[in-house]
Image 1 (cartoon, rainbow, N blue to C red):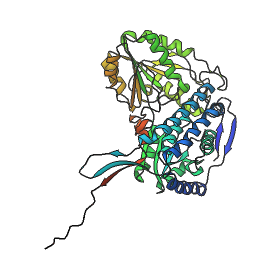
Image 2: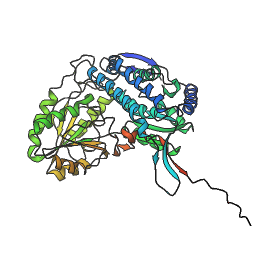
Image 3: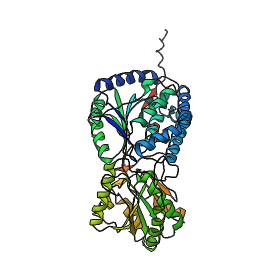
Image 4: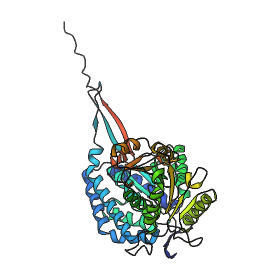
Length: 465
């Protein structure tokens, strides 16, 4: 079956690609494995020169790349330009810091000299999603390539043009072609790749279900893996918070990428004395977001990326309402199969409803009422996910203390959760394991080798009479 690029706003088929046969994939893998043996020997300065060039190309081509994201998965074009810029910043970051992040670490032992060296693993397979089609790839590729690894990208099947555009950027930046290749393949080749000894590691960003499947294969074939999976981030509003600021940020945190973000705020946990006022303010802000053609500069949110995603979200809302949730902002699909999904707010979210335990991957805000701050933490942690979260309060010290009690990979106080190259990114529980970004991210796919150098032994001197 063809890999098809479809504009979710118009339904137009943009382009179709024939999936690679295994013989094609195996040849690319052979070349990548051979390239890994050479690329690992290059200097950090050599790699950095090319990575800085990739950053420059991302900036030069930001409008073209933003347009591709708009037509392939519905991202507003202004957001696409920002994504391309963020990718460029991250390429520059690793070009500048990889050498220091992976420098030998001297360790004091009884040896004459002992140290930890960080050496590349080889071929890393990346399985990436469609929601941030450039950013998700770059936050794997920039550190992996700077560490001396090579990358094979199996991107989501609805963004093949974005995947090929990234391959072209690395090639045009003078990376050896075999060090980064896009594989236009079906999922049935993933196990074959992971079973091959030439693939040394795998990283996946996607759903918990996909992560569990890849983790099982990685375990079966003893491959290092990093998983960044789903999230149902808590946005905690304490009674002393500035509600105007909190509500405005809450709407932005829910509506980013039309709600299709793992770290978008999804569960708004509000202390009882201010829950009604906060909900009203949130409703006003969410209702004000403007939709339209993603290529229009005025568009603030576009369609969901595929019809089945919108249908699934509608079913989750309907099932939650049937079990007691209340709709306070009407929205959703106009008809089954439509990709446009207008913002919604559900209240009276209780255990047993999909809204309480499941991830809602779209512009539906779920409001939960907390008795007090301790109850808010309990509700935040009563989730199978643990990716991110935020706390809104005028008492910053209290906010930090409460943030330490939340089971998540990142918690922000008085700010929207976001990823940046300087800070590690990843989750706990069903949100996955391992870390991307920061110095921790570049160390995920290296062999942390212990080197022990003893003093040279001298031959015994012969005794003279």
